[in-house]
Every structure is written in structure tokens, then in C-alpha cells.
Length: 179
Image (cartoon, rainbow, N blue to C red; front, side, top):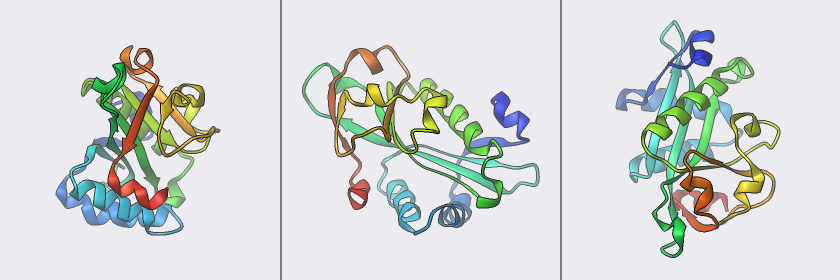
């Protein structure tokens, strides 16, 4: 467990099938529509999720959720062998936001992704939030896909994650709803 998780009194663990209803309720509460909850459900059931974790408080309540899905590099160039994932979405109960739960989830999950051998993580989100974890819009400009701009950021977890760029990528099919 990371120091951030310990400081927040959290246990961070992989999602189990028993968590599915609680995760759906959490994701529905964290976003203004059900699009993200549908995305998580579809990614989970089409086999595109690489890592899905929850933060559980001392009372055993799931208070945060994070999901990473496979992103496929194009079949040309030096980056074709890279392991690339997308962070989407991250959810925290509205009444528990800005308390460190999201940060603890991101830090713990990035450590897991390193252990899994992932090379590059992509995210589309607030440029004021993700750079604190090392995400960089300049690095993301070397990734050609359906997203662009300063809200599209990348984080290299290995040397290959920055060396084998530029690359062209395709996101999992469920993301087409957001394009």
C-alpha cells in the first residue's frame, strides 16, 4: 500500500465481481451522466480492462475507483511493441473528493502498472490535476489518436515509453461514444 493510501486510511485493491454494483453506483454519482458508468461496464465485459482498482475506507465502503484499458499501437514503427493503457475513468464519491482518495488511487495503480510491464499511460483530463503525477501534454503530442490538446497527457513508465515515440494508437471500441 502506498503512503498516500495509508495516510488517507484506505485499502487499495483490485476489483472483484462482488464490487460491480457498488462501483457502478459510485461512478454514476461522480459524473453528470451515465456515460462513464456504461464505459466501465462495457470495458470490463469486453475484456479491455488491464487494471481496475477500488479504494476502500476503514468502514469497508468503496470510496474510489480507477480503471485502465488497453490502447493498441499501430502495427508499424518502433512503438508497435509498446504496452499502452488509458486511465479512464477515475471516480470518487462527491462528498469525499479533494481528500486524497483520487491521488492515492492514481499513485497505487501506477505502481501496479509498472509491475505489469506497461510502458505508457494516456489520460484525457484536467491539465491542472494530472501533471502532479508526471503526466505531460508535450509527451502526448507524440501520440497520434482520437484525442489532442493540453487535456491529452501521457506518462512514460519505462524507457521505451518515451524512446519509442511517436506512435499512432487506437483506443478500445467503447471509447467511440466519447469521440
